[in-house]
Length: 577
Ligand code: FES
Image (cartoon, rainbow, N blue to C red; front, top):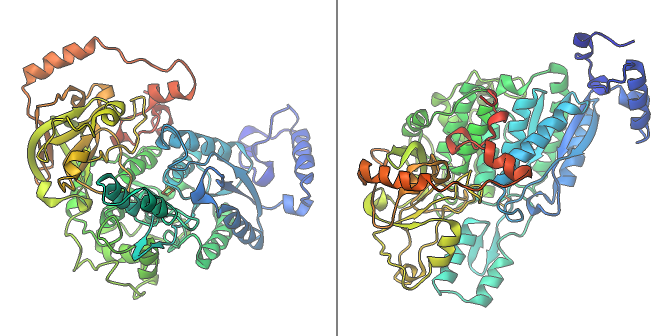
């Protein structure tokens, strides 16, 4: 006795999404038989089903505590009267994926979206942490249109190397720069290597993972106050259990992500990203999440937000002292949101059913450590940590993290020293004969989303060894690549259109003059239009080679540019045009 389509689509629990054998009752009977094989009673099988997207993997050290989190979520679901069913999805770690983890964010989003939709669940708990996992899960949740709640894995605790307090991975870079400059030797860098990451969790600074955790909370997709709890803190387990309880409530209320992720909550999240001086990757990921619901992240509007949002959090790589565990103890994302309150859309709904305004009212007067999270009246910087640049070198925009850059380089004209690819960079950057001075601007081409490298975090171009030896600590560096959220320097990223898509970045030649003006939000290539047209015509004869098959082919043919979040064109709300 099959029900009409519209009636069966309202089915809940295990009865939703049945296979169609032409006999609905048979489908139910078959499904129950298999589920009973796992030892569930008929009563348990009649409960609201809460899927738990579990991303533990031994290729993902940041997620090594996830089995414990899954158990805590399960405890919460069961206590609230639901049935918790765990399912695996792809897991992504920054250091174990080739060519880079960004290449697979959209694959993880597709996997997660399709499994949420295809499997019979009333709500889903998404457990993510390492850089690309939270954006992938939020993109999936936005598209899957089922009630969803994000649980963050939490940051690592810091460790010690001799007198230094250290944490991944701003300090990884600090020591590596010393090693490259010959200030420390092999034995010391090996000793440091064993001290940088000593607990479970995500990088201990305000890198991409912690930025995305804060964005998830600012969007309203996590329980309040949970984004920054350290991975190994007992509060993290309590947050996991409470998330399980909340998921059962969500299953009953049917509150879906499209009611939570709106144009207004995306602006709130952008404000938080700016106030944290957060990762540049956050701009790409937020654009991708918003794009799943047809909400554009306009970089010119982003600049308006940046001009009116103070930097409040002194967490590395901003400042030189505090880590995520300090940020958590100082009051976490809630403290930042309360300072930003006059700038936020307070009527945004959160996953608990409360509005943001109601949440913040309930937290008024909570403790804040002002050494770590400054007040809006006494900010670290009066303007946001990130700024979008436009000009003849970046017609569709580029991003600079000014809060982690050298202010003396903000207004700069210099000679371009160009590397045509990452291989070219690796080959020549430390060549003693490289013609480069501290006044030059380093340019890396063909490292954007459509390049064979798939937009790696290579925008943090190394300072040439011979300049390091002279004590040069920073230079203007420009590319269509990304940069780790833990990195720092005067680094212009995400130049769009990228070189591989025919952008002007691909037309730059060594010796050209480039002008950067943060004040004017401009990035210009000072070469005549006639000369650029000549170079363009020359390049038109060179056709890029596409991979023959598989995911590589799909990626290269459908990936969008950075301002559209590097999503695949057919996965956005609008789909392929
Ligand atoms: Fe996983 Fe940094 S490598 S968060």
